[in-house]
Image (tube, rainbow, N blue to C red; front, side, top):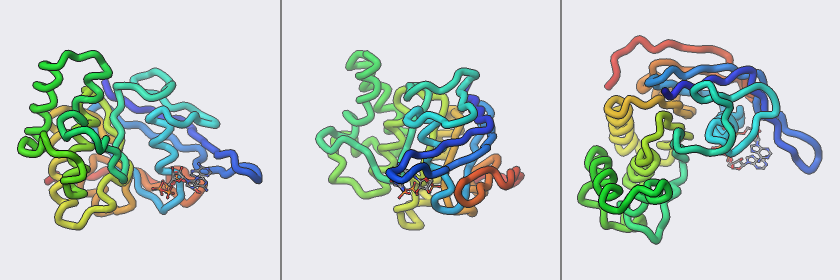
Length: 226
Ligand code: ADP
Ligand code: ADP
């Protein structure tokens, strides 16, 4: 479980003067457990595609399927992480992580147990009672990853998650993400404009053309991971 199939995907936005064609004719797949990156110039539609996969946008043409089913709105099978941290400022780190589990109706003791396990994996145990404002950018993004994984999604979608971080923090975050991916055996679709990062982290990399984006090349990465 955790297969992504995008077939001949196109999406255009309605604008006051007409339409903006953001993406056209994109086909790609992510096999269960695979780590796949998408790179391409700014504005080629990478975010648009991730948002369609997350269920926030509907394709104008083609299809977006997860485990054989067309995506129809957001769901617990997909976790999403954005560049800007989207933590609840009025909740502690652990409460942020528990939020999705609470929505799913998981009872308090079990929520706490699951949140603590994941926070431990991400090296956040000593921060569980902190509020987001007390954390650095890298730490907030770490909490964001843990929160996205808390409900046990089979797929993690990341939209330039480390773009705003300094080089050293970025390296740590890459290691944490790789670690989570290997332990939890999830599928990852990772958007970045950094080709080094894409090649370093991924099994395969899709390269997109400038807007309207479509697939230009597919690179298999034979190198060993960190
Ligand atoms: P990327 O993530 O690759 O930078 P985006 O998916 O953000 O690209 O944007 C693709 C294209 O669609 C860009 O030309 C962008 O300006 C346009 N676009 C994005 N969101 C909207 C929107 N809500 N309304 C109109 N045009 C949009
Ligand atoms: P990114 O390149 O990381 O996708 P952008 O700065 O292009 O970020 O877009 C940020 C937000 O603005 C997105 O939610 C996108 O949908 C929206 N957006 C981008 N371009 C346009 C546009 N031309 N019209 C309206 N909204 C847009």
